[in-house]
Length: 580
Image (cartoon, rainbow, N blue to C red; front, side):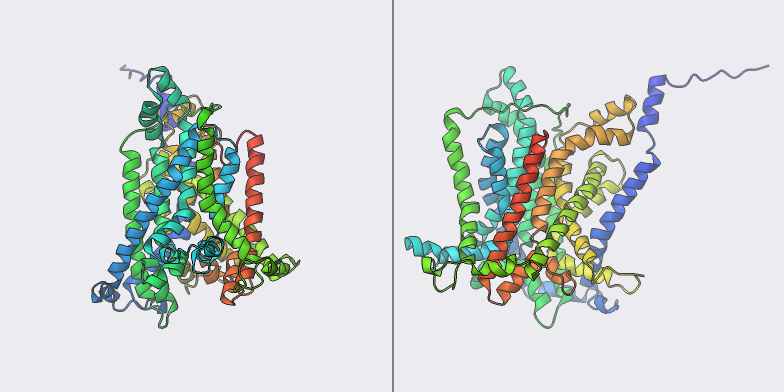
């Protein structure tokens, strides 16, 4: 009788490793499918409808006739191409400005024990609480002829403000905190232990910085610059308020004109949006190449108390630098907003007899439209922050740690909301949710605002979490799974705690931006529903500039107080939105 030799199989350890690292459990497939579905609903479908509108001029009417006929707009005149060139020039200038303003203080915040560091963090978050068009108006009130600067000093800088340089300057002051937070968190995470180890082995402080700290911080820096670029090319309020007088048009103002002037040109707006998407996707590819062309990862993600270097004699110069940036980027525009909210009449100027608090009375009245707007923006901002963090964390983990072919598609899809103006994405949401084939629609309800907010702001947690995960070696996950931990337990006890600082910081940014969102609210808010942004905008339209500014002051104070309280509470627990 012939017997078949028994195959002993692979060693126990190898079999265990193959079983753990092999086929994904069904639960992970469900999570991946849910994340993909969320991206599809929030981003993919609205973008698809915009693309269809660009191809088929009468798509909004249900017709697929005359495809590509509106693409002739690219050759009929050079206006669209000029707007594209101006968009790139403006974005490039803002990028340089954000590096100049945000990079030095971000590096100092990450490497050194800066006095009052957490207070500075909250101070530099204030620009995100100010709607860009409010900031632009504040600078107009300050620098225009007979503005606050001329009233105090006799200097008139109106000719500089209403130029390309002025527009880039104001936009830089709105966006430089993105670079500051990304750089400070990344440098703080890698610039302590690893730079210290390099110095123990003989490297000087500058060499340790350029060979260790800076390379490990590149993914976060590149991610922040990508977001700055995307926000620069989609920003509408500042170019519309400041550049209109000079005839300096960008793509987003051209799109707005096509959507607001009669006859409405949906197809022309969609073509311009496609150009914006192409620009940001090109920037995304460049950023991804920069972040992945070198394998800068740490082989330990173990949390540790970061011992920061003392500033010593540089304490006061560094504080002076922080103070200068805060004065220009925060104090001056905020003071202009507060001063305008207290003016009895605009023409009366800054005189004691012309200052009072009459414009705050209707806002502070219980049950008023202003109080309702504050409450609505509050719950929308909180819900958006948690929803984007949940979806963003899962998507980031799939993009960085996943192996499927769809992860690159998911990564590209996640950046699309920054590739098109919020007003155009809102149009895409309207087109998608008004489709006749849907059994039900969210249009006309508060839920449609939440859908739009999440879709617009989703790139923040994804980009921050992706940058953080790329700094953490995947061997940590592998070691946990080989040691017997399930993927869920590994995610809960290793990956998520290491991602938490970046996700919480992103949630704070999302909360700040969502609390004053304007464009999507104007387009999608149901009748009778008001947010802070729509309330302020309506006050300006009615000529009540002081009331609009008063509402902005109250909203900024409430949001800043919430962010500061949450950050200090987390700091006492050993974490914090701005902890490294």
